[in-house]
Image (cartoon, rainbow, N blue to C red; front, side, top):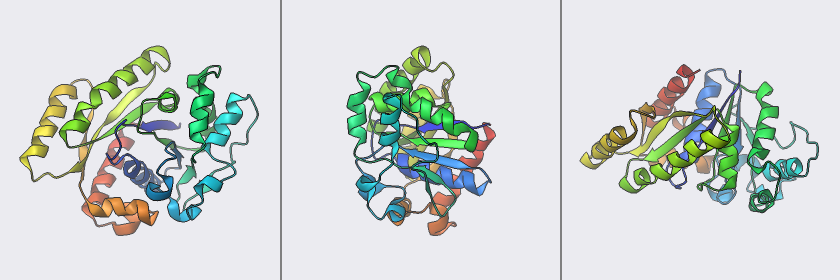
Length: 264
């Protein structure tokens, strides 16, 4: 049975894409078939999970997520295998490009506009064990589509005050989606990322997150340490497991993978 997880935070720079890639790679290492859906077109050339595959030709893709979503909006048929890119580490990718901004406009007047991405995702469920959606850093209609299509949401949050402060708006949005659009969506958990565990400030932030959300939302035991090496994975177009499998970040994502698998 396929599980769809939205990796979501309206704030950028919280290791959302890095988490999507490394969790996906971790699940593949555990024998799972994984599809990553990229919803973030604006940084694909410089911060993509898979730049080496496409050789920086993202905007030249004939088939990408916006293409499929436009076909669904226009009630046209689409091939489920179209546009899928196969990564050397075993992850499949449905890439995005700059045309997604046009889809956002098209969704304004679309029938059942919140369910467009769900139509695509539901068609892909039979082929994968996990589908990971790397959400845009916003709470607009594209992100609402991702939450509507998902079984659960994983929230990476940087161990700093402002990112934690922004959690309230995101969680309110998720509860609204649960109430009106997707009653079955659950919280996969809050993932503390970019953590410098040696500072008292980071410890205070962890206590703050636990105090405010610990009783209602799971908080992963795994914590992703701050590391330049983790950021380098995006530029290299590989996961941390391929770049340096003995690195502490690799160990942290391995533990995260085990926690996610335990939720099956």
